Image: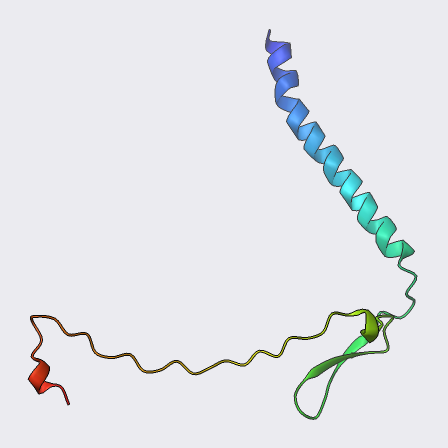
Amino acid sequence: MAVGSRVAGVLPLAGASLAAAVLAGVAVFSVHQAGCADPGRYVQRADGQMELVDSCVDPAQLPPAHQQTRKQPEPAEPALNELTDSDSLP
């Protein structure tokens, strides 16, 4: 009975190890098949933005960048309750 419980305890570890090895192999294969000899480099432009240059990435295939405009939140009104004197507030 002790051998059965040992085997049952080792099976999840062996399965996880096998899955990790397979995923690592798939990652190495994918990178090898990418076919890009020059991975590119990042260059900082004069306006402070970073830009990827000399790479295999085609800008036409990338999704458009969303312009994020943040509105300034309005100042919160002070809380009033029965303990505050509303006459003393400016």
